[in-house]
Amino acid sequence: MKKYLLILFSYAGLEGLNKVLFNKLKSGDRLFVRAVILEGVPKLYNHLTSDLGFLGDKVANDIEESVLEGHQCITDNYLKNLEETAAENNIDFTKHLIDHHQLDKMKKDILEKDLDAVFINFSKNEFISDQVKEKEIKDFLKKAGLKHYSFYDGKLE
Image 1: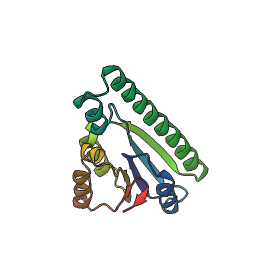
Image 2: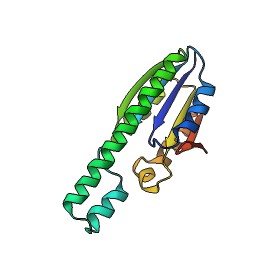
Image 3: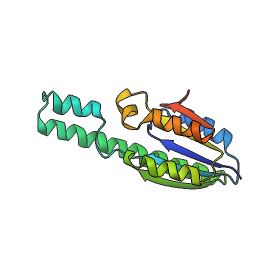
Image 4: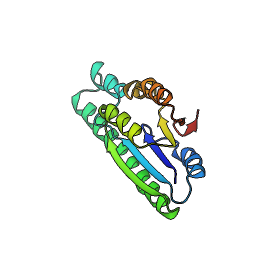
């Protein structure tokens, strides 16, 4: 039995990620999923709607709510489908929703799980990447000696 961790910072291009992921996973393996949930819109939206002030507060709030609702819907649907696919393939599946402030806790969790590999779906959006401390995570995995697969919106790096 092998143990893998999937970290989702981006929910774009997941079909490509799934192909690679499920080619690695075998019956009886364990898949831990850490899905990062936005508690606010990425910096890019904030700057467009608030700092420049050209849309007004009502429109800015409507955009923020719409973005967050859409993100949550995509997250829920993907995780449900992932869980079903894991069950069909006899893969032990555990998921946790986290926010980007819990990265230190996630690092500790990674070291305690004795993982065989980590799959991460980052975003090509530089504003989101900066917020999730992409470089810090990659450096941590390299230092820990963990095999990892970095995806950018579903495309393997």
